[in-house]
Image (tube, rainbow, N blue to C red; front, side, top):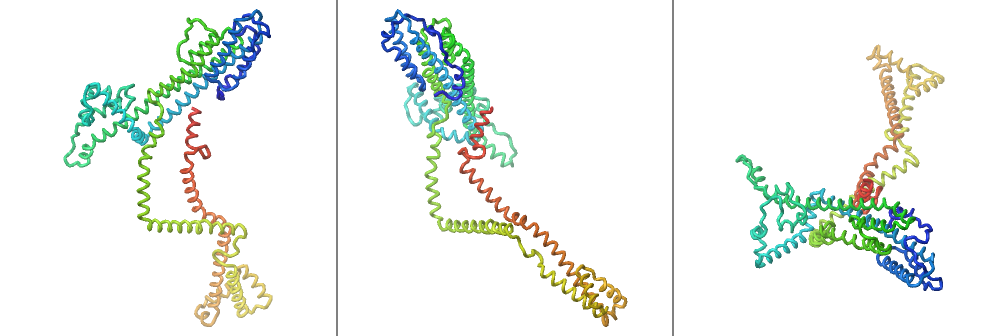
Length: 556
């Protein structure tokens, strides 16, 4: 089944009714009684082309057309236009199907090259990934090195011994004097060097003389760095060569991708020519040759004489289904442009994971008592956190939302009323004893006291302070002072009541502020665990990191 892109391109290629001489030169046929089942076979071949196209199906259809052509040549004084139309429809459908198959083939190869190039680019960007990739491919590199050494020993008629693998023997077997050219030993370890020379960076690292830098006698750190410099340089060399290998493979894959994209563009531009070929059958030869030249990536041989349309279609099918795909696979394998196999990428984990698991299990079993205690403490901490910082504050929030708090936060209403009543009694008693108020005047004074007006008491106080000693002993100075103290207490109570009212109006805000840190901790912890668990599975608001990268690549 063609892809959506190919279907979009071939959708306008509707096969109309064509004249009798489409794609062929007619020869007279016999009557319908002498048809010999040719029409039925052609109809079956046309219906068979509704299934996905393959090279075997094309060969079988071409065989049916060839057989029908041979029967027509044997017996025929009359033209059978129905058979000619069936044959023309089959050839047109084969041409359009092979065109769509070629588009799908180039599209899949371009997509594969783009995917592999992105993988090599990810390795190239990170030194950690480069080191890990170098570790993963060490067995294959050593195997190549061993094979090259054995072949070299065989060519030079030298015996195969363990001493042949020493550094001195290897330098003798693979001498290298030109820094810009790699030796067979280096090419065995890093195969990309067969296709390109050493870079300036790697050459400088490999052939640096390690001349000691003069330092002061007392500089210990400089001496240590000077001693470690050759080792560090040799450590940087494999990483640099690995980076060059990844860059080389990425560039080759990008070149393949661009070539396939260019071929896709040429095929897409051929849609109008293909539609014109269906309308004008005599153009079938030129159209088929152009398609073959695009698929094979070879110049069109215009000087070559044209063959029968079915022969040209068979050649196009061979190019689409076999030649081009095989050449593409061979090119990728010859330059090792695909990523390593899953086993190659997984062997360090498969090798190191079992011993690490066994060691972890043994350590856990040896310290099981402390681990049990740690688990209990963690459980108690989690329970205390959930109960004390999540559930209880949430209950308070719900209680506040449902009913609110009837009690004061700082002071109670009963305390304020008691202080005010005490002030009223003290004021009325002083007014009754000193000012001789009657019942009506006392009632008016009681109303004034509730409003905070103590004018009569202040007038008595003003009279008493004229002779404070006498008033303190025989007068009402002390009673006036105590009444003012009580009045100050009532004022303080009323101020606290106002503050209490303000706090009660923001009680829900304070409740949420109290539970917000716990919710923040839970949110961050849950988000981190969710990202660790589902981070590589393409789940999330935007489909995960890999899907976002693929979207950005598609947009680019």
